[in-house]
Length: 197
Length: 197
Image (cartoon, rainbow over all chains, first blue to last red; front, side, top):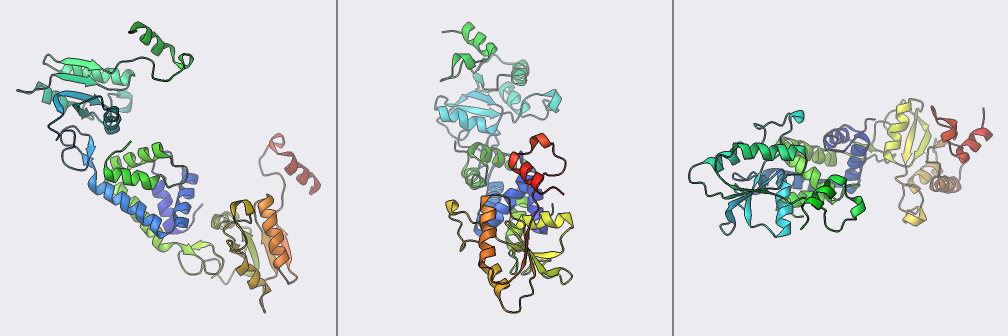
């Protein structure tokens, strides 16, 4: 169904967002129209401001609003410890725990041949060349990748590419806090049993 | 979870959209960031363009991009027939059938005391005063309101306010095209039986 030209154009743009189909895009566009000019202006300004300000950190590829993120530029953090994560948001999640004082490296994806995500498309080579480089002070690599085939494959590949002796660890696997035992899948339960403490 | 200031601001704005919660807003904001500046600019431009151009028609309160909509300003349409609808989009739906050549009147809501939608909040008085006015050429009122309590109440109220003899009709009720009889609710089926043709 076609509405007016500029509403149709907005609906067309909104449909490009993930999880927004034609009906939903129309509903959103009409909602924005009904909310009036102030609402559209605020949303539009927030979009432009975000696109102007947010960039990838030159060192860890996390997201920040300067060339180097607050974590990488903080001399109080332990720069000899690098936590390898899949996505920029993972950094904020781990920071939320307050349990890690090292720095990060964001891969921006995991190895996945089926999705054409090969080593060249990910941010792996910068990490490896940094560690293999002369005079590198990195002593520990903490893998905080999702516990699935792609995460394990990515970790195995990076381990293989590292030519120096290094302390390498990954997040402990087990049952999450506050869960019911009956709701845990059997693989997780088996691992939690084997790694009992 | 807080990301960067301008991403947080965008997430805050996106959360104001219907059906968009905190997690979804964050996903949308990161998607828009990843798509790059062109994507943000196009969406922002579509928002501003829509908010500049789209307005309510001065005559029928439908949505259009000029003071009077194409339907109201079209002298080939039958201006003695007014179809009363709830929402501006209903106009486009009915136009899609190609079966109606009259004009429209959009109420922008239905009478609903529970939602504080009273006669003053809806676009009812303009319709009634137009019809009751001297020299009014309107001869037929077609109610295309949703078949529920609020729709029936709104129709009854408007009928009561009209002081002139007028041909008044409403959309036929019955079973929709292509449905299975077993999936029709009993009230619809009873009406379809009583109005069988």
